[in-house]
Length: 170
Image (cartoon, rainbow, N blue to C red; front, side):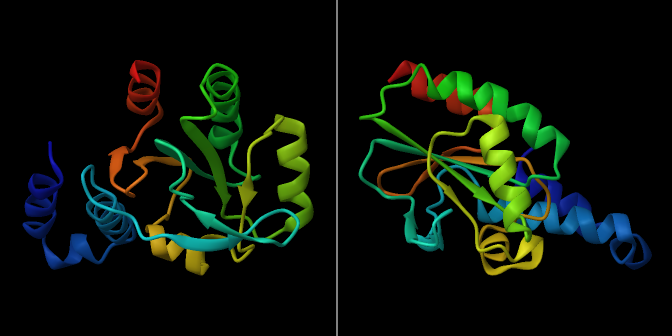
């Protein structure tokens, strides 16, 4: 089901359902999916890395940028890191850049998770959590979440399976 069909179904819900906790959460996910739909362009943004240095994402210097949104406290994110590390170790780094965007608000927990999970690619975070400007810009209300964008900033995939297929086929 596409985003427009999902929005149509959501709009048909009663006001009571739309304003429920579940309805509000569903609406946030629909808004994120609409903002990050395949074919749309993301805005370049500047986010501090682990050393506090301003880092542009996506860098738009490689054919693709895989942008992984995660948090140190997110079990599914930490599990997905194992797959990302495997993919990272098999790709052409001249063609694909990895960058992970944490929605953590605790720097020491963030840095410890990076080290424990063996994440060797650039890591960035505004350390303002899920309500911070980075999470709001990308509509991130739940993690893990992933975007694969090309060098023009066009979204090519929003899940790891599709991103892998695109990366491996190029």
